[in-house]
Image (cartoon, rainbow, N blue to C red; front, side, top):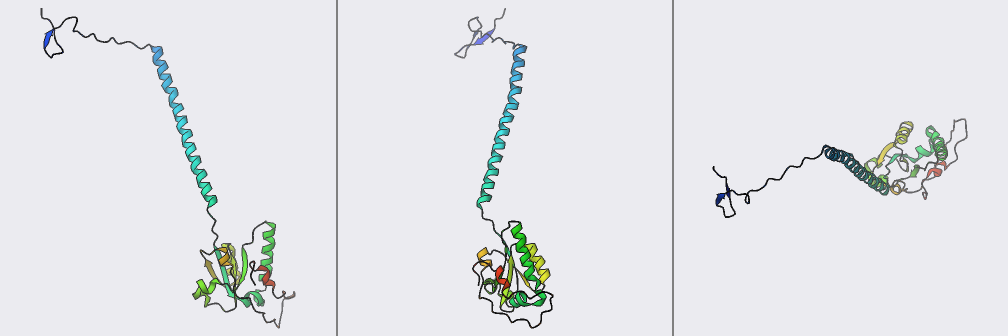
Length: 215
């Protein structure tokens, strides 16, 4: 009867004996209850991991939103100014334009009712006209005046209402630059004829709408 051969540590074959046979490790069957517990543990761990990942993602989003809000608060708000430029006598002493004073007074009253900060002024001989807009400045008779505001829609409305004015966008100008006035306006000649059913406005009414510090 043939005997099985095995290979010893020296690499030579020898007859298999009980001492050189390797016993195969027995396979232990996992009870069904243990398998169910393992599956339940894995199933329970998946939602928990998902919740942790969700909380981390929410935390990252919240941090990003907070950083964006902080940067927006720190960044200065830039206001754009717009101007309507015309001869000063047209603004102040033209009977066809005498309603301007009442329009500005009504706007001031409305702003006070709304607790709104003043954002429109009459600027006599604006310093920026010749300095930054020389071409437009040549089209305006002197002395001149500018109605300036940050309310673009209102400026467009006033342009249509006043008609004989030059609209200029003061892009990139600060408030101080937009409101910088030049020489004081001279005394205007009193009109010989006044046809309106109410008294003429008091000369100098426009000074109530000057920027702080203007002459």
